[in-house]
Amino acid sequence: MHPSNPTTLAPPPIAVLTLSLGLTLGLLPFSTASVNAETLVSGEVSLGYEYDSNVSVDELDKSSSVGDGGALFAADISLDHDFTDNTSASVSYGYSRIDYQDFDFLNRETHMVGGNLSSKWEKITAGINYFYINARLDGSDFLTYHRASPSLSGFVSKRWFLRGAYVFGDKTIARRPGRDAQNHGTELDAYYFWRGLRRYINLGYVYRQEDSQAARFKYKAHQIKVRAVQRFEVFSKLSTLELGLRYEDRNYDEATPSIGERRNDERVRATIEFDLPLTDRINWRIYGGYSDYLSNLPSADYDQSLIGTAVELSF
Image (tube, rainbow, N blue to C red; front, top):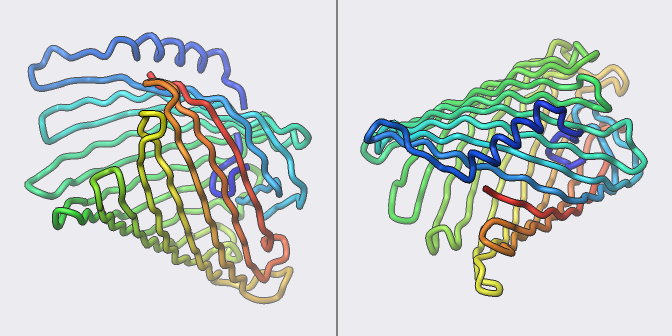
């Protein structure tokens, strides 16, 4: 399992049908009858393998302290529509799964549906996006999550781009009603571009307040991140190297009964990713990461390393 993402399972027949239709449409980008409106269809399919040094279920504070590898499959399709030169919308559907070799009871599939609407006035872009996520473990319902986020963004100079957003989330975990929660937060991001999209850095801050049904799971969190992206040519193809570092401090509102005190977590995550285009439509991705979770709750105190690779076909 990726330390920052839910684990994943295989597409039902309807998903295969949707994917086949998406592949067909993807070969035929089309324009609507309106002079100013255009709709484009795109998507991606990927196959890969991932090794996790400590297979875990982050949402339940459960870790196995045992490593395992699994086969990955993912597919997504999106429709992007331009109403005018300044206003656009998009909808998307994504599916992913991971099948472990030994921890098959933690095989996980995730469905995600999203939508976005944005409009630009002068130098400011206002937008709102929504995501619905449904994750299943070993074929059974596990997690559903709704996320809505209005945002404002724009360039404040030639090199600096700023974005601010409010985030609302609603989380339900099957058979764990105490962990069901709503969360509210703010996100602030600053991008500095040295050479356009070829080289830039992203600095970010997130504040989140999670109000769970059970008082012992309520917390407030501060998170800072830094991400550096460098694009360069390899065999005449524009490749991408991305480095990321994230620190999170969580402070829980109430005492946790098993330890008799308020829980405090510090989480550090480091990631690296390299994307190498093999052709115009085929991309090879290699990635890795290390997470160090420090907590006074023993079950939430562990570290984890991850390495994976995938071949992606875009259309």
